[in-house]
Length: 113
Length: 449
Image (cartoon, rainbow over all chains, first blue to last red; front, side, top):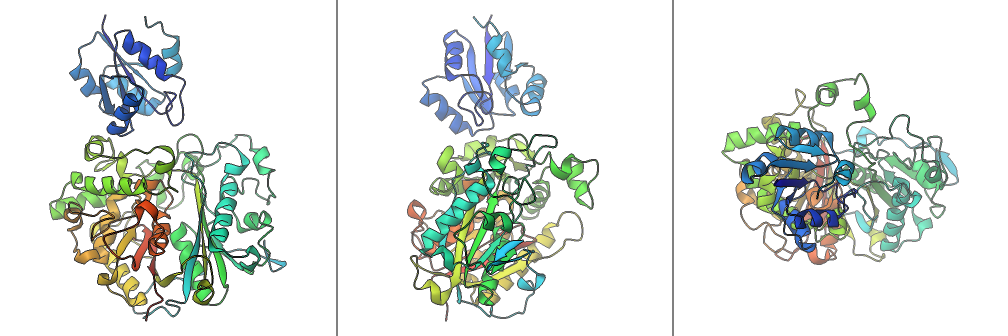
């Protein structure tokens, strides 16, 4: 089964402002496990790309917060996940775009392998 | 009650007579007789971390001490303090949340336990500044630094103080802003109910004006991209700013055009980021300034708009009429014309109204409807037409004072990597916040003839 995972940054990842509970290594492992991985954040797209480059993670996408529907149209997957920390800016738009939504602690607890 | 000269007086907002609101007042009577000398900035933070030293009171004391040191003044010689008692970026102490007593008790407190945490009185500052033994004059310039510097300049000119600290500080707490305070209540008095209670974002009014501007003059939102890119580039050269200190991220045209709408046509990057920060300036008489550590930056005029729009949001016509009126007041009192401006540092927090300010000023001959085309030319600090060399709120975070600091630093030739090189920094204008309703200052390398 092919799955795509979209990560919010601020409040979700350890690099976020505020820092979240998901580590960069967590993202790296999902990528190594064969998932389509990227970020969907209010940070400038160029800053998202720079962050992934800095960590040596070759993400599949880096988009603005409202562009999850575009991501879904660009990539074919069996299931689409968005992980974020906000009801209004993550959960609601993710579900509207046809993604399954996970809070960071749910993402940590989920068996991804 | 603020401690003044061994006694105590209450600190009040400056009276209306302080502000130069009308046209036809002629040259400012204190033109060139007041000068800015010292600058002090606190570090910036996205939100308060709960420590006493990083509370809004703590960072304010740091900014004040840095300004005094920068000017090379004996703290005991400071006899004036002008400040804004409001420090909120839209964040309020949550109802029912336990008070942060460790931080409150780390300082001498006033009757309000949240003084120094979510607000700041002159009493609190003086209660925690044992070195300021000579204060004889205190006043509030409410709203932002632009207001406070007008009050301080006039106070020095009028002889109410000879060495005056001007302070503006901002706090920001965890969580979302504009969700607490009056907005959390069941009722809001006055017309703010239309905007706040029923939920338009703060940038809504500016977005409406900008939409009308684009329709009237045939412009598009993406024409703002060079301004945003330039502002952030300048901000990243401002070591006191938030983005330079914490997240050195540029905003490219691609980033700007991909950002989500907050209130279309205002997008995310047309809005500024609330932060914690404090800044202080030391103003003094021109005579005293000549003997201090830094080069004096003379104040040629201050001007104020108190125009009330006919309805909730000013129309584009009202905005244009008022920015033109403000410019006439600025130039008349300073005895200058638009041609004398080396650069401009008008307010930008929302980015979409910066062009209203500079078109009203006629900066570089601009007429209404021309600024977005002007943004497509060289507006950098190295060119002949610098726009917002401070980077403003877009480049440095929400403070409403980067523009003033930058004017002083540019004229003192100590803006570092941000120093304008395409023009000689001799006369500059800064101010805001809104195009309709604000306070403005003209700064000069010389006291004028």
